[in-house]
Length: 147
Image 1 (cartoon, rainbow, N blue to C red):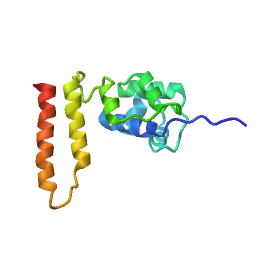
Image 2: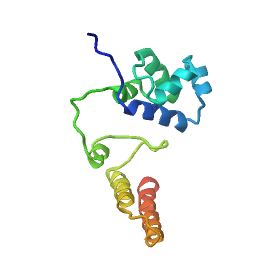
Image 3: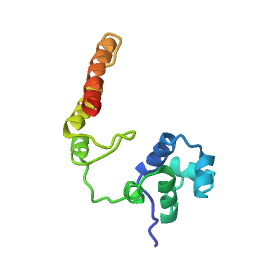
């Protein structure tokens, strides 16, 4: 019996994220790639799970990302272990909204902000205090990024 090929479950979220980040409609992506908008929609919703290499390549080009990166997200390589977000961020280079150079201290400030947000109880009694703490953590991150 033939094993069915499918992409990683994160692929649909990634291509939807990239399309939204580029502020493109399904029709605009279709115009650029030649891929039917209904098919793109099904990929984004996880209803189609086996796009071909040319489809992934066209989407990567439309979204301005390396084909290799999109292929990596699509991979169902079950041999990979789960890593902490800290390990992932500190051991890789990445870009956020055009900021290409995240120094180790900027990465730490980003992790501190994420850890802070996760730790919030976010109830009526602590919400304003949580917001105040988040503002300081955001300021620390911005200082690391832009001086």
